[in-house]
Length: 151
Image (cartoon, rainbow, N blue to C red; front, top):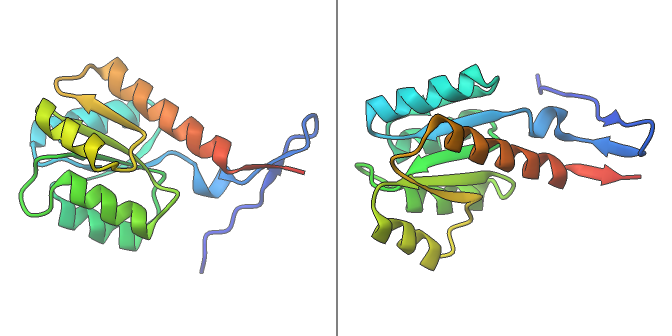
């Protein structure tokens, strides 16, 4: 049975917020480095987000087929499918999906920008707890803003 959520209408502004279903803070993390994956997962769960973490691009695509997510956080360099290919495939299949690309390699971050990977942000490694939370909060806010319709 589908997971339906009724839109919430703000009585003061007349804005119907559709994000109760589509921008609830469901995040998919694709990162092959276990310690970084755990760090991101714990940081975001403590901030109140629902996080699914996988170790490569193929596992991420599988997760995207089984559930809907508001945000994909992906490393660029991973075995099998890299984060750039994952981002392109994921956003082609899920146009509303926001993406944050993380990488310790400046050349790879530049490659992502040159290919116009549809990303909310490119975050260099190493990053702090505050930086990852800030990028995620911004991406989720943008998702919610896009899903609000004024009546």
